[in-house]
Structure formats: structure tokens, C-alpha cells
Image 1: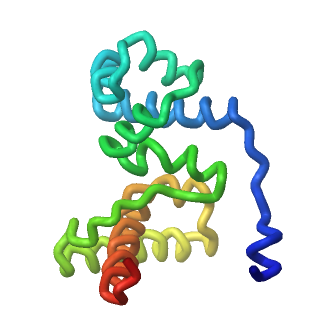
Image 2: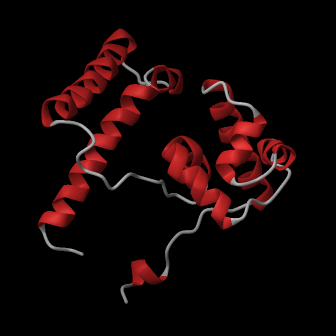
Length: 156
């Protein structure tokens, strides 16, 4: 085992911060998708009150409900909380966009970021937030390409 693998840097972790972060993501999804807490509960296999509690960061969600949320909302649900430990959830289906649409998604993100950079020589957090959807789409394309490369290399 290499020294770098043995002495990995671990980010500080707070369980209460994780619950709050997951609750924020769930609340954002609820608002963006115009869902009720009952709708969320049905997806997570829980009742309305329990789902609302998760939204408030009040309860530790079981793994089955967490995975149901990941399946339904993928990175929108899990990536903020995974970010607390330096990870992210990515889809492994490399064929979600045709090649022309994939390259176009990457180029749209690049152009938007270049325009922000040209405006003031800086990419601020606000600039990135403004183009979050484009950045996420381009990231999904690259994740799909990585999966295609993994499969093509026979690394199963």
C-alpha cells in the first residue's frame, strides 16, 4: 500500500450537518418539482410526517429510503451531502445523450463560463451558480464518457 493511500486526508464530518444538507436538498427538490411532502414520502417509502422531518434535517434516513431518493433524483438529491465527504453520485448510463447533444452540452458550459471570465477576469461563486445547470449537464456527459472508457477497457 502506498503512503498516499495509507495517509489519506479525511474531511471533517458532522452527522448533523449531513442531515441538514440532505434536508436542504430534499426541500429544494420539493419546491423545484412542486411536490408535496406526501409525494416525497411515497417516493421514499415513508409517511408524510417522516418525509417532512427529513426535509427539516430532523431524522436519520435509512439506507433504503436514501437509495430510493438517489434513484429518483440522482445527484440533485445526494451530491451536496456526498460533497461533505469529497464524493458525488454519478449515473453510469453512458448513452443518455447522443454524441452531438453531448458535445453541445459541453460547449454551452464552456461558452457561458468563458463569457463570465471575459467580463471581469474571474469566475465567482455567483457566476458558477448562474450556470449550474450547464455545468451539471457537461459533468454528466464527462461521467458518461468515463463509464464508456471503463466498459471499453474491460474493467468490470
